[in-house]
Length: 92
Figure 1 (cartoon, rainbow, N blue to C red):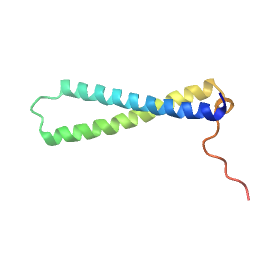
Figure 2 (spheres, helix red, strand yellow):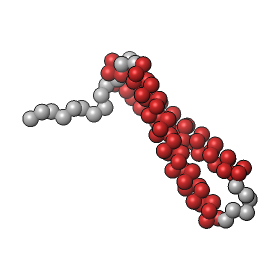
Figure 3 (cartoon, rainbow, N blue to C red):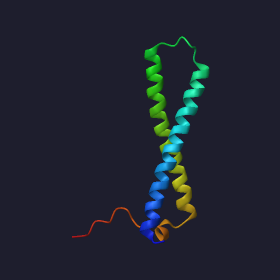
Figure 4 (spheres, rainbow, N blue to C red):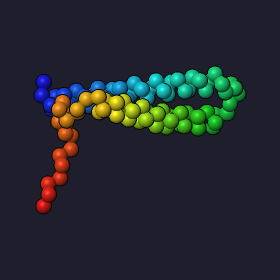
């Protein structure tokens, strides 16, 4: 496989990993909050909890993904296996 194919596979796998991590965090936090909060919580509070849980899962996914990429970057030379996605600007 060449660098462009490796890059495409990496982007696809990373996107799927991000989605899986985000869903896992969302479901985990929402289920924990469901066990902690009383059942008579109002609908308005429930909506805010759902919104903040969703935003928190996005932030958590970003943090976990950053740690994974830093670990992989330190362990492997990514320039050797992947094609650059963005080309450097040409100097005038």
